[in-house]
Length: 324
Image (tube, rainbow, N blue to C red):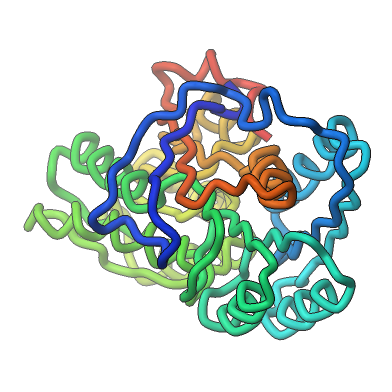
């Protein structure tokens, strides 16, 4: 249950990756490398956008450890963009200069990383994009679906607040496809309920301390009874919001949800502090698995979609300790 291995793959042709006019089929095998020779040599460059978040660390370490255990002749070179698009661009350029066979990338932002990804593809280097998109073709894009999960969160708020209430939204990194999609999906649902309003929203870069500060400011602006819920784009920001809400003594009046499914958030659900978290698989070991397939000339040309689950008080006992 820690990593939902069932996948939906959107199969497309050799052109641009798009969900338009394509058909989705279920992949029945749990292991994309089943029956594949794992002994071939391969150099994979992995450009991680940042390592300042537990979910990112889990993604990086999950892929690194799996490769070390199962792919004896794979050289996995990992770089950390340190939450800087400029540094990540430089990292990718450095990886390309090292004659990598495959580029695996989790871009910090779409626009900044698009040119170097385009360069890699033009040079015949397969690109495996994890979690976030870029504005150009890639070989394989692996993620959970942000917008459907965000809509699921929106419906959760509608249900729990009976279609009426004021909501605070704490967004991720400006310009990141994940933040754009988690915002759009949620807001689409809320917009269909005229008695529900998002009264304040701000980017907090997926960081707990930024979310706590924003929430402190919001609690000063809106008095008791004026905020009914907080929708955070990830668990770290949800936990930051809870810290500020508890410090103000207003935890009984405000419902908070997170997204990712990290262990301390799951425990917060069990403790009655967090109303829900929506799991977002951290793309390990899927990243290195599909990178290896591309390396040996058997790429999956399509979108690999990982499953999500809603964790609430009703099922949290089944999830405690099974996050990351």
